Structures are given as structure tokens and as C-alpha cells.
Image 1 (cartoon, rainbow, N blue to C red):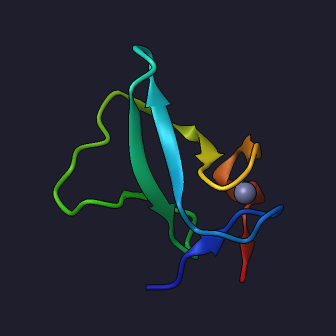
Image 2 (cartoon, rainbow, N blue to C red):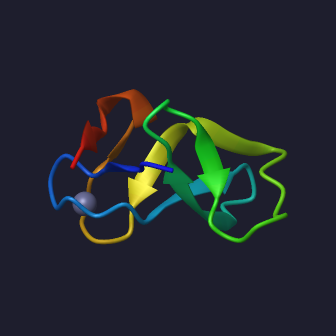
Length: 68
Ligand SMILES: [Zn+2]
């Protein structure tokens, strides 16, 4: 599975948030799909339209992430 990376710092580790500001660690595949880092973890209720980079201050649509 190929992962997209942050356009600024080029790492693949991202997180998403839900309405309660809880975080889930995720990756974004080269198909643009947001998937949980931990297998079997649910992303239900999380906003998958905005991802936050773990390595820098970048956040935005997963569509803006780049191939490494
Ligand atoms: Zn980054």
C-alpha cells in the first residue's frame, strides 16, 4: 500500500479529529482513502475531510497531500 505524505514535511503520519476533539492516527493511501493506523480502529464520527500532520503545522484536505 502506497501512502501519501505531507506537502510540507513529507511524512505520512497524520491524524483526524472528531467533534469532541479526540484524535485518531491515520494514513492516507495513494487512492486518497483515509485509513486508521491501528488495524481495526473505527473512524466513525471523525472528520476525514481534514487531516493534521504529526510532524509540522500543516493541515488540510487529504486531496492536497502528495506522493513521496
Ligand atoms: Zn507535515
